[in-house]
Image (cartoon, rainbow, N blue to C red; front, side, top):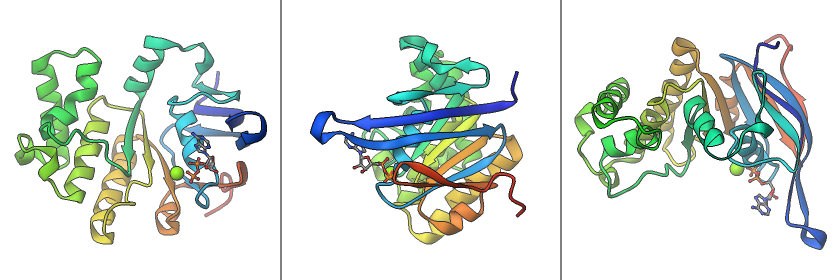
Length: 232
Ligand code: ADP
Ligand code: MG
């Protein structure tokens, strides 16, 4: 038995094949404890997003494995994989991925709809998440009409609606001005601190990385630095 929420074992990821093959991850291993906040750092093209997609079970490694607690995720396929991902993780991406023509509440409750939750329960949980992000008054607005900061708060509400144990954030403040970005950062760290949600943030922002408990640095597909165990 282990207490690690995630364990990455010797992850390799190659794109393409033959002469055009590119090895984006070349053997990456580490463990993550529940409740940690972790920054994945590195230059553009170093393999951060590739690693995050594999950790979040959005993509499979070419070799190696991800364990979620004691579950070898290679055993998960199809609906069981989707259900596990949907139930365990929340996602906050730089590009928002909101449906512009849908309302805020529709966007926020989409993961619940996918999970087969009934309309009344969807509405109750969606409004609770929006209240937490101080967006309840925008529930009926179309997503397209929101500011960048409001959109990212809607994305966070959507990430929270399933009570995830882990939030993955890929450059969450990348499309925001610095003041709005700081608000979004504070929300993510509050969720980590007050609700014990494990936070895994991909960033090339050193200040954001420094706010995390731990920093993993990726260079050319290899983990070159892990501050775990190093005194702050
Ligand atoms: P980062 O997020 O650190 O900028 P990525 O993980 O997105 O880096 O990409 C790592 C490397 O893998 C880059 O060289 C990128 O061009 C390459 N890569 C990423 N996705 C693909 C893909 N679908 N096909 C081919 N190469 C890819
Ligand atoms: Mg990236």
